[in-house]
Image 1 (cartoon, rainbow, N blue to C red):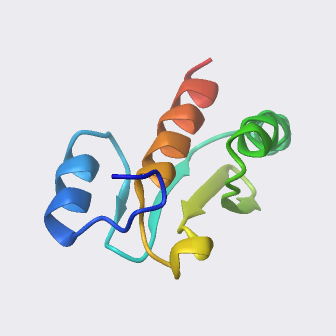
Image 2: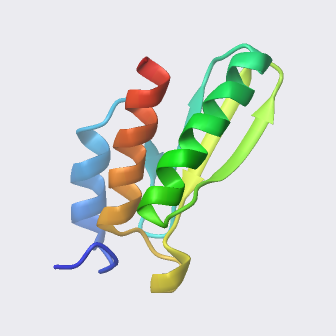
Image 3: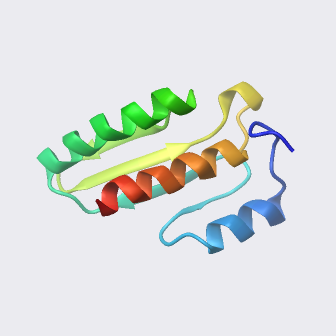
Length: 97
């Protein structure tokens, strides 16, 4: 199975269950982090570097005291793939510091 192969509902559910705070379905996964605004900006820059390496970019929303990342693999037709979970794990590692 390739990094951009769509995952079925059971695979997505299992992968979400193994990751704290992530939610979603076969079309998109997402997580909200409680962070200070300026820390959020710093985290976005750090995630952007990893996203560039993976050639896979999250959608990002920054609000006061809240940072949300969400992913879908547009190049696979707007579905969740292994690549989304690889990026999710990288984001968690960056936020954890």
